[in-house]
Image (tube, rainbow, N blue to C red):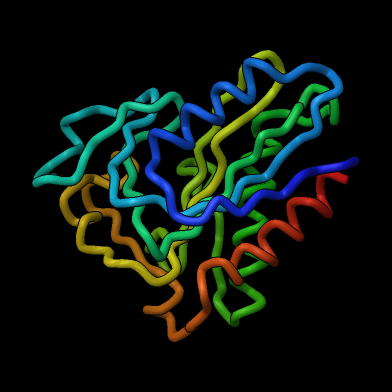
Length: 201
């Protein structure tokens, strides 16, 4: 199955989100699936079940109420974001399967760098020694999904202290650089995307 992979560089969240929505609404049965690799400028995003009470002290960082699943999270340069624009009806895969696929892509990638990570069925995402390192959020329209995953690589994690990450008051976060792995964010995308493509093809 053909999939187009696009590197978008560093872009603001809302611009990319609107492009994902438009792509999904305008696609048809022949549209080639796409994977977008991006880093976002600093932003908090509230998912469909997000509650503003989990925004504690956000100062001047913008907040966007988005249409993905999940609660509140933070994006900034140094965090890898991979968006899946996939016709899941065409490849006969369920939403939960896509969530698991994204989690496993992060877990397998982290293992390549000697990091033991796990997923938690009750709290989607990827964790290292109880700290969250990767998040997953999706939206499905007309049998097609968009949004995807974020994986903390080498960023300023301070902004996470000003929210209840993913709706959990005491949830700490971590990243590859704090686990003594130094890698460029765009390089980190390679094994992630490779695992995704292997699984859906």
